[in-house]
Picture 1: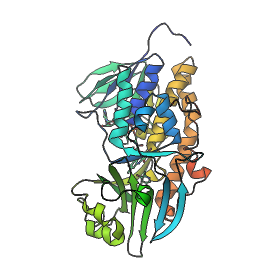
Picture 2: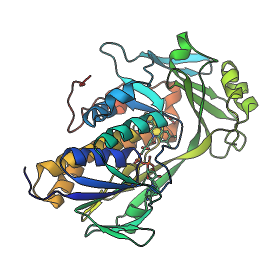
Picture 3: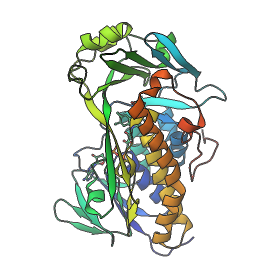
Picture 4: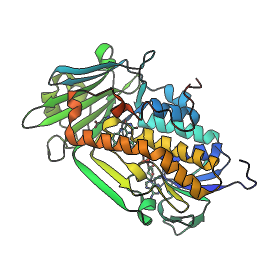
Length: 374
Ligand code: FAD
Ligand code: 3HM
């Protein structure tokens, strides 16, 4: 559809969903500006899993090649509970499920590079405090920016979302994770190249370490402990507490030092994903427990899906409805399954490689091609 006037979007948040929205709209002829509250453009956190669906989106956004270069493709995904293997799945080989692991910085950097190739404007130390359905983004310094579309991609604590009158449910769970990065030089090769979900279940305490090589030299560990377990949720991590449950991981546990942060699992569900000219994208719309490792995958899928819906329709209102109708069922499914897993600890019995858990991973997202460009 050809349009005489270039349309403009103001985007709050330069996380994965804000950058993906910016690229997808720019690719479709829009001008965009991205506001990031932090003084620098960087990702918080440790490692991240990106399944096939997210990889397809990264390909469509022009970031896939750079993501591949520096990400890790583990040959297997295992679960070991109290020393017994409860599931073993070969991955990343011919005909196998694809799942890349990497540091968050790596993914963020690759997406930013793709955005910078398109000359997308980023403004740092620019905090959004709200938006109006008529299409204004409000900044903390009092500026009000008019746009054809405002995107709230400002994460789980979204101020853009909270300024709108959208009913929301929020849930927190009894578990959370400390996420850390350590060097891989200590444990490397053979089984130590697998993703291994280690569980230690005892009547008095359940601990879990999702051991994840995330690059040639970097190991990501997501260390799960109950919210009320003050010893195991303490930062800095006490290696003794964890090495008692997972003695083979002692060398990497002792290398953690001060790094790490504990976050409780949480979920937010909005009654609708938009209000007037404002779309809510990513964690601000649908934060989910990380148990299926699909939060960012769904976030960037929906960012791309939004731009495609806009390109396909005549009015923005129609586009936002089409977008939510098309993308939301899969996000809702993934979020509810992730929540069931977070509430149950069923993953200790092994990840189920079925369509219920992997529905999003196996979905070819709107605006992507089933084949990769490289
Ligand atoms: P965010 O990543 O939160 O980015 C929001 C951005 O907005 C930030 O840069 C922030 O600084 C900025 N911002 C915040 N407020 C403002 C404001 N007022 N104005 C301007 N800017 C603002 N997903 C996966 O796909 N795979 C995984 O393996 C995975 N593991 C996870 C593990 C854990 C423990 C957790 C908690 C989540 C995990 N996720 C995973 C989910 C994933 O991290 C999120 O879904 C993803 O980061 C959402 O991206 P986002 O851009 O919507 O939000
Ligand atoms: C990547 C990832 N996968 C699963 C979990 C979980 O079950 O808590 C956490 C993760 O970081």
